Image 1: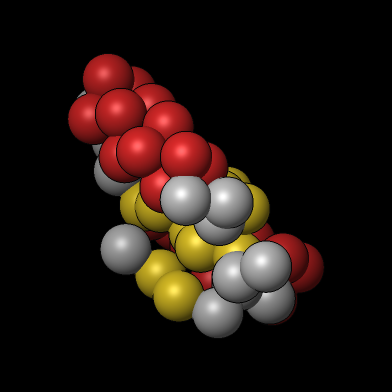
Image 2: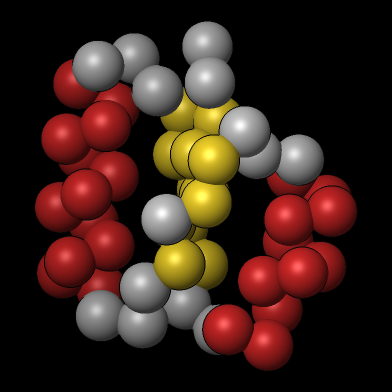
Length: 50
């Protein structure tokens, strides 16, 4: 299963994208703070970042 990181500060949009991707069996990680993206990326090791 692919892991996708969603970078979006708007909670509603991030949750909507996450829910739709999870319907297709993707694992999602949401992050809101652009400053933490690199740390989260290294920790979670996603295959795709949106």
